[in-house]
Image (cartoon, rainbow, N blue to C red; front, side, top):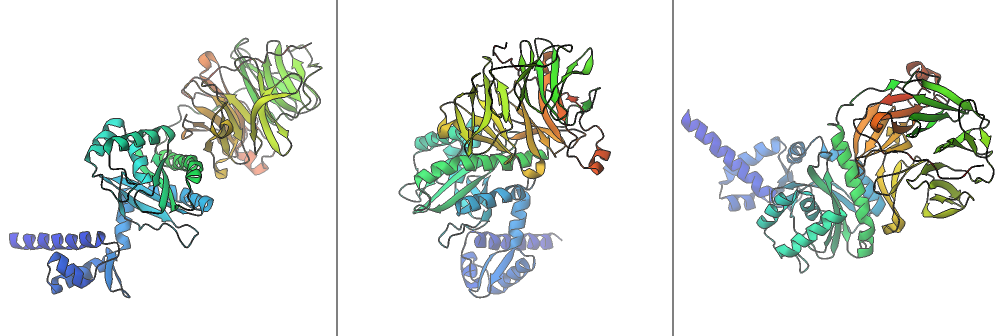
Length: 541
């Protein structure tokens, strides 16, 4: 019995030696080369190869008469790194990067002191980068490796760099540890890494780490191609795109472990709206104002009197803003001021005659808005005269605006599903893409910002509201019992309630049968406190 067990172990060791030798030879090995390298009799080697081929671990190329790793090995590798399935989460982004650049896109993971290639999406050109699946590469001279090093906690990163054999692959390879540390710190600060012909002469690569919602490194994605196509200027433009794509991959991985909702949405007692919108919490009066934009009326909610109609008006309401004397209603026919329940809306003279797509108020009382300007859209400070001051030009309209605690303006563009972060004097004109929501998830509708830096938005046609972390990753999704939540705002004691408006116009009858609360105002307990909204500091007659 002991002799049989020993013979079985010896046979297994030999089979693993065969696999190891084949795995280290990307071009494959012939039976004669394997026999000479492993010092195995040909008959023994033949039996081992036949068993490995039958299991799919090894394949034989009939034309070149060499053996290579079989697809079963790659299935095992994918299973080992499925957390959940990293490859499935990255495939759409890899294809998008390939389509964006025309170059080959890669997905790698950290394995010991090397990166391991899990997936590849080939570029459109005949001359392209084409690393083999399962190939291992050094960390110090690849964009994927440097990106993954930068995403590790500092102690783990420093310990790993001390162990790396900094072998020179090309004259451009970094072989000095202090220089490598400096470059990794640069990568950590900007989010993406470059391989400037450091592993293969004439080939450049740009990569970014994939990190999940718990801050754990999961891998890296990259784009590689000939240096004459991937110029330094193009790499600088592609870097931020890689960062955003990697964040979207990480967000998918996190979704499987999303925290449960801290509470279900509760419908507030009151009338239903055709199109509820523009919830605004007034700290001065401790009440929530919101509007029915289509059957134009303004509602007020307080903890004591619940929800009631404060007043109605003629014409659709395009926006509602807080003012010291009540609510400013932005309408195509002109602006109106609504004070108390017994006061009719007061038409205002001298107000802007612009169509505002979105509006919000900054802490200093200034009004910021989005309006069409030629074939583009301007987001800027709006003066009472109707003139814009400064701001940013965008290629698409935005439907919601909100200021965060860092003094940046967040803008939601439903058409592309993009959240923009707008900063004065920033790179690229100060316009940065914070996140992108796939169309299948719903359309961004409304914005609210919490005290921890999170950005909340309702998802029309998505039956939910979503929170984006400060890095743009989705970290919380709260369901609502209606298909079309439209807008949201923090309010209540300590700004710890999240109010959500909804719509029933445009909802099919069969859907309304399953969502009878459509058009109602909802409140949730999000588990975080919001930032206060401010009153517009404009004089009125």
